[in-house]
Image: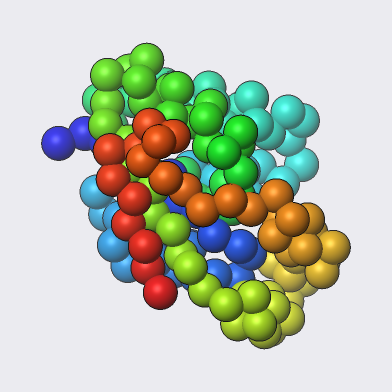
Length: 138
């Protein structure tokens, strides 16, 4: 069955690894990280997700998606396409995320201010946002 999966979690929580292990074979993976130099990455992501859903593909959005506002646009895309949407929240301690991020090299390493900014915006995803299910991975 077609679906949209919205990943939620701080940088270094393991979202990309989880997607590779659980969804990459069945879902198109969309991430703003795929377009590091693109202008208006958010608009591009919405356009790509909408096109994939319209084509009948299941999609997973592999970004931090820390706030309700950031997730709302994705939930709206799923609703518009008539596709169920679920959240997968990687609930990992900040210390673990920071250690994993510090082990990254080059552009893969997110500056500390970026991780802390995501933490500051973070709110746990809930069914009241329009998700049919919220899966918590610890």
